Every structure is written in C-alpha cells, then in structure tokens.
Amino acid sequence: MERKRFNRNPNRKNIDKTRVCRNLCYMKTATVRDLRNHYTSLLRWTAAGEEILITQKGVPVARLLPVGSVAPPSVNWADSPEVKRDRRRETRLTASESSALIAEAGGKW
Image (cartoon, rainbow, N blue to C red; front, side, top):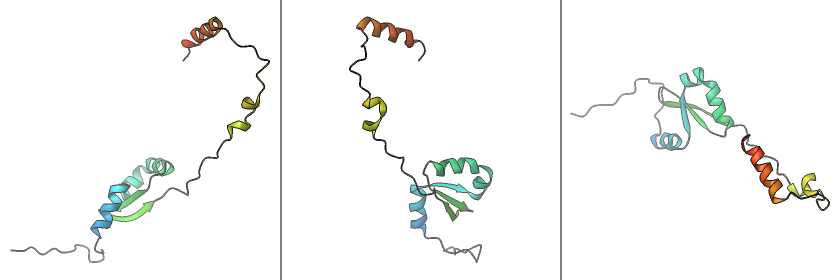
C-alpha cells in the first residue's frame, strides 16, 4: 500500500531539494536557535568571509553574508624607508659577533 505524503503546514512551500543540497554542501548552516544563542560565533564566521544559511525547522529562511570583502591595501616595499636606506657606511657584524647575538637572543624566542 502506498503511503500518501502530506504537508503538515499548508502555508509551507515545496522545497527544491537540489537547491538546498547545493547550498548545504558549500556553506555553513545554522538554525534560528543557533542564531539567537551563538550570534557572536556566527558573526565571526561572516567576518572571516563565510556565508551562513539560516534554517527554521529544516527550511532555509535566510542567508548571512559578509559585507563586501575589502582587499587589503597593497604595499610597495621598494618605497619603504628601510629599503631605501643607504647601508654602505654601516658596519657589518663579524661571524663571532653574529653567533654571540644569535645565542643571546635564542632563549627569548
């Protein structure tokens, strides 16, 4: 005998299972309860660039997205004062001076 499937909530729309699976496979999910109880963790995830799918009773209801990602400013190290510094007049350490300096700093790291 074939069982009839019924929708417990008549206001609930049919779910596109392939779309849900695609979203679940590629983004983190959290329930509404997780959002309420652990919102700081979810905000850390979004700050790290993660998208989070919020579900209620297994049905996706919202997505948390990070605000437009801003690329870090590029640095031109060639313009750095330390790179441009003229080192020709500076004295160089001898091998024994270098060894002593490394030994002295070895315990601090």
